[in-house]
Length: 285
Image (cartoon, rainbow, N blue to C red; front, side, top):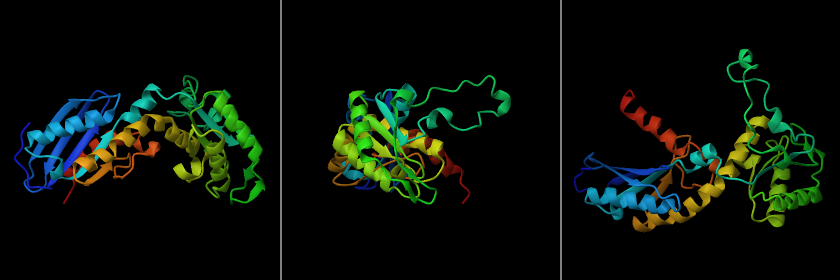
């Protein structure tokens, strides 16, 4: 690890929290000098590994957190939760008549129809017994064809609670056109089952195509239990140590965000940063 002493507040700090190691790169914007460091990750509390690695890199550069102009953070916490299936107790709520939405999926199969005989459909992200329905219906323009049955929503919330569901996704038909029913469902669920981390499709990704949107919506609550403690403990600490400097996360669209709460955007947080960074030196002026 090498690096010259930086000018105050001229450092950019990039930290990647992985399952095994936490890696840090410091860039001195005044001199162009780079400093790298590595430290074991701490799955019990990723904030510890994050700050330990940051301290190590800053010490090697002869700097402190007050020299950091901005802190950028990528993480595979959400990625690992998806790959390893670490978050149990996931439920799904949809419009009556569409309980098998996840099971049916799309007509196409990977590698075309020539592969259809050999292809084995993977397990759905939510088992069928934890997929529940509520009577309601909108048309494609958002007009109400069948009012939301609020009593049924409360009953399904109680059913989720009794079955140990601690995270749930809501994907009602045509909610992209009018999210009122989904928002009401969220309110009723919050009151009836407050320990359930819920996500609604119209907030996560307000677009059509029920199967694709259902899957994306479910990723959000699936990884939230893994992300929430990480984000809650970590978010204020770099700002405190760096005298209020900006702490930004790297979501999978390769931009930056001031929040780690949107699980679906953090599922490829760290992996997306590599191609993004590699594209800079090869970019045509």
